[in-house]
Length: 118
Image (tube, rainbow, N blue to C red; front, side, top):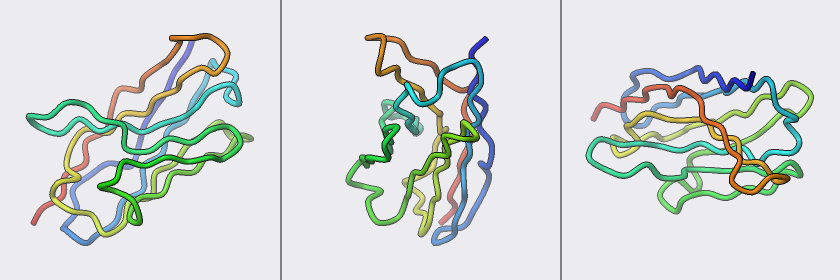
């Protein structure tokens, strides 16, 4: 059974930091691109950051220089270090696993709430 379990969300003041973590089970972790998506109130869910098995990263422009994604292939985990947070970063953050072997195969976590107060 595939499971992605996020942790680390919470309430923080603008300028503060949070670290999100996602633990994956039931998948061959190295065969998946891991990502973090954000669903902000009134907006569509968007990809915030992603990382391939080899460590290649991508970020949405609005978070570049503030958020850093990393993965530990030995522990099947992916992290999102969030610094200099802004109120616009508020939303539910979802961990995503997209297969590099099977087109269209992806899994989602249940989401964790991040709220940044001004």
